[in-house]
Image (spheres, helix red, strand yellow):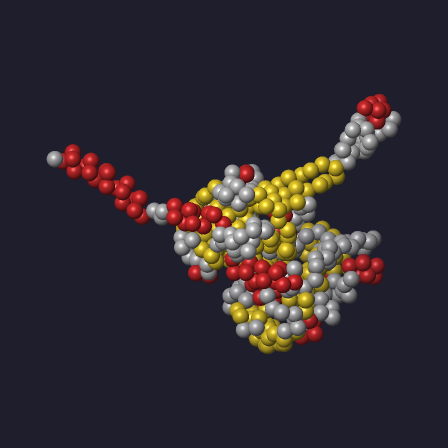
Length: 461
């Protein structure tokens, strides 16, 4: 009797566990029909055509390669075809397809393969590199199955989600996992609050949908964190509400119009919050203001901490680009800043964000004589030539750094332009400003680095 009871208990446990696990079969059967495989072809210049190895002409091997390595017109093609794979999903019955911008970037030909094995040529309606989204159009000669959108704001950490895509070319592969975190920021990705999951995502999954258990698309699988190139448990999806606004602009004007106010910002750390008199590390710290830009015209200054934009709270620095970017150029918006241990409201007219520009790093010129070390920094007064090259009116150059300053984040070549928002004109003035900071407190150093400015907290001890 006891043996039969124990056996029944062992049989019951797997049944109970199975009852608690979600069943994805209906979701995949209904929604998987709208998921597509995307292949692209791109013509590239041959890296070998007409190129000799980097060998000196007096080397005996030079003549060998010159004579026997194929040259243009001698059998070596000047161009070759490069192919890539990705995923996407149909968002309307008339054939609009959403995917990642990097899947179709620079493609000469795009082919969309449906689940019924039909292969259709696609054209790019528009793409947006800042959010890594692209909108395609196919003509299937009839109504197509399409997905339903969900609300990613209702997603809860720990909730089950499902990905469908073509990892490594294996079409309509299904993987599942949970939401690991929300609102993640990735390097160089300021406009997307990513959904982090542990759903297995690999090369080829890019551009595919992320579903909730109601069969609604809540995200677009876009990136993974990996040291090997394969899945390591960290995948990131673009929330579908971000994509919605992008899609409408791509349909209407073929590009995305964003707002800007002309500031460079950085996170507010606990140390910086203490130095500015903030009770907790919130907001976006303005490290520099564009001359003649909207922010300068509104009265925003370096050292201000932006706490609200258009009534919306800026909890962290990455919130501000999304709020400003989503504002129509020409809009007059109210910004609340923290300055001199108090808040004030300023009105800024939002301008349009232009294409990315690459800043040139200025040369340092001839160094001035070195000064004694302060906090592990060897400082130099700037020469007139250096000020012109660096485009700064004042400051001291960090010729070398170690110890406390290096640990705080100061680098060789930095120019310290202010201490606690007081301008630094010489080494002696810098020393005097530091001496006014109480021992054990934090001094906020405004640093010019590579054409940009940022605050570095330095503990005075």
